[in-house]
Length: 191
Image (cartoon, rainbow, N blue to C red; front, side, top):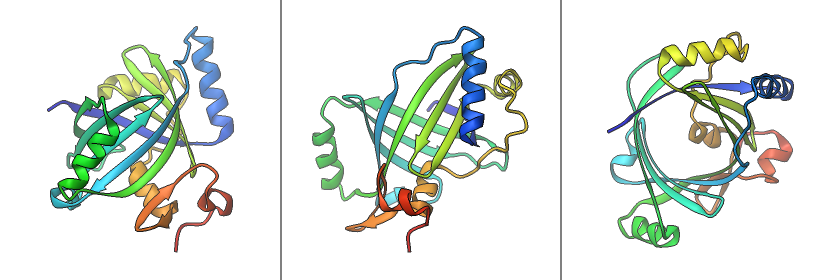
């Protein structure tokens, strides 16, 4: 199973503008803005810590991804990840529910992708904040951090699902973080 290596950072609006300006100054061009809806399923072995099964719908495409976090305390996280393209996301949702996997979390995300050297850099806007992820081997992550002047921005250990649990709103047994939702307007975590 492939290993994903990435580091996540929480950004201010100013930091986002500065990082995007640096990438444009390097003559880099972002890919098309992606609008995502991510559903994280629960049930069976998925309820064990560090495991996630996600159905992602993005700009008319869909992907099913399994992730398992590998032990470590570094802000650069390592996890097993396997992703497949899904031709019929509604059909896949039905299959997952038939196997007793149920939606536990849903979060929306607006993502801009950049390629910096050998690294994938993404700027993510979620209802609870702005983030950047650098995905590459550890040495390349550190090199790109320097290029983007992001070395002093603290790494974020929390995953988007854990942040959704903290800041989302529960609706019919599913915790959601959607743009324009109550959690976004109030800035408060769910009760």
